[in-house]
Figure 1 (cartoon, rainbow, N blue to C red):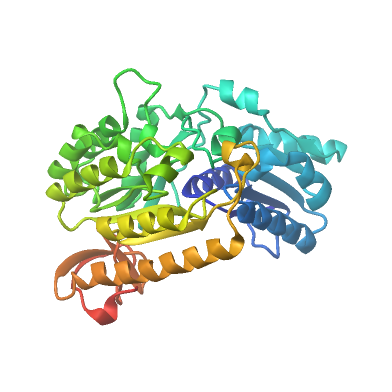
Figure 2 (tube, rainbow, N blue to C red):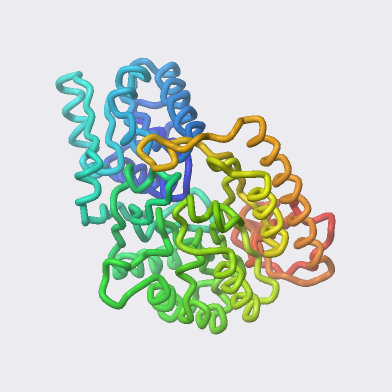
Length: 418
């Protein structure tokens, strides 16, 4: 029996997909591809309406490619639209964001009865669930970098975001399980570990006196042979003195932070229900740069949020320039049912697009300016394949070296991938 898996969206989805694929392999399945499979496992995303649309397209594509295969769908879009996926996309089993470990029981049941199965938790049940679903994975397709999921769910309820409704409340993974997985991955030869989660920065909020910085310190102290530890993202409000101390003391904590901004306008941030203002954001950035002067800061930005005026957009534009981010992930606002922003008046699509284009141009300028600062400087590069690698500060570098090799490279314009 052949298993083919496909993941859309965030690194959490990629981790979960890899974890379940590993379980299938342990059960005796072999890896297939999109043209040869008996079971397809697809992990979906619903962070925007485009993500939901892509999820539907991929489910339909897999069904079209193999009419007889069993199609198993999970993830945020599955939790949002379970019955639709069965009716319109002809999937066989829909699991949402829970019940994944029972997948083999559901496959067995479907083979026996041929009846479609939908096991999707309601929002109330998700918000009551306090249990972290331990999937665990210690092998990845990438040779150098491994991802570790440390939390699920979110309690922030930003006005535009449906994830707390689809993923449930914050559930932090047992630190002992995380530390065990770190050791196993290092033993297998992975040189960079990336911690990821739905709300990584809130890790441990339901624990007593144990938070993200404590976890980071435990990983770094107990694994001195770990070449590099990176965070997939962090909120500015969670960057405390303990975290700043770690940045100062541990050079193998990556010289790169992805800090979500979303808007550089205080009035928009308030409507978004974000927990900071631009002054607080900038103060933390300055504190970080006192310790790591050349750190790469990347961010997420939403443009065209309901009622965003030209003045508010330009506040965001100018604030981004002031912070001097290295890279922007730009998203036009997308209405999501169930959120408070869903009821707000949406911006004109033409205006959204114009603002996206302005920020894309700025993004190109920021990336180029930051990268040029390192020309003729020597940086260590961890090569991921025969052609490219990544520095601690997130510069992608071209070169001809074996995967998983660390090489000190003099950065030149022609070996910068930007």
